[in-house]
Figure 1 (cartoon, one colour):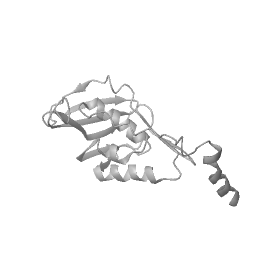
Figure 2 (cartoon, helix red, strand yellow; figure 1 turned 135 degrees about the vertical axis):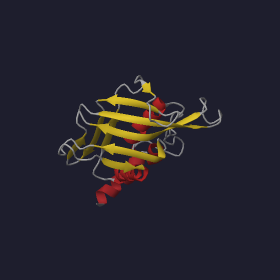
Figure 3 (spheres, one colour; figure 1 turned 90 degrees about the horizontal axis):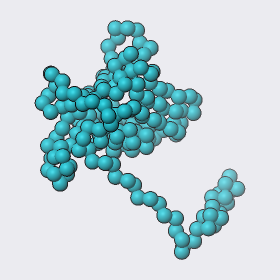
Figure 4 (cartoon, rainbow, N blue to C red; figure 1 turned 120 degrees about the horizontal axis):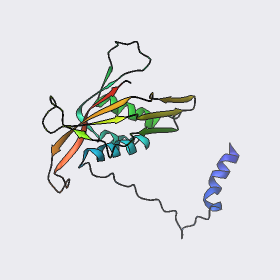
Length: 182
C-alpha cells in the first residue's frame, strides 16, 4: 500500500509536470444541436457510449415510452415497457458501475435512414427505423448484447423554439423507441 502511495505521489514529478507547464485538459465538446432527428440519434450514440447521463436524458421526451423484446422470451409474451424514469435509472446505473468498463450503442446508417411520417402518429412526429443496431455492455464477467437482425423504431417529436435556440426552429426528442424482433 505504501508503495502505491509513493508511486502516486511521484507520477507528477516523473511526468515532468511543474507549475510552469500544467497539463491541459481539453474542454468538453458540446453536443451538436438537436435541430434534426439525426442529431438526436447522434447525441444518443455519443452520450450512451460516454455514459453522460445529462446528455443522454436530453435525447428523450419526458413522456417517453419504450418497448423491448427479449429474444429468449416465449413467443406471445408482451414486450417490457420503459419510461423516461427507467432510461434515467439505466444510464445512472451504467455510470456508477465499477464492473462495466465499456458500453457501445451502434445505430448503422442513422444519418441516411429515411424519415417517415406515419398515419396515426401525432402531427409533426417522424419515424426512423434502424436495422441491425448493436447495444453492447461489456462487464468484467462477459458481454451482454442485442441479437443481430432486430430493428429499432424511433419516433421523434418536435418542439417549436426560437431560432436562437435551434436554427431549424425545432428541438427534437425521442418520444417512442420500440425494439422489433427479427
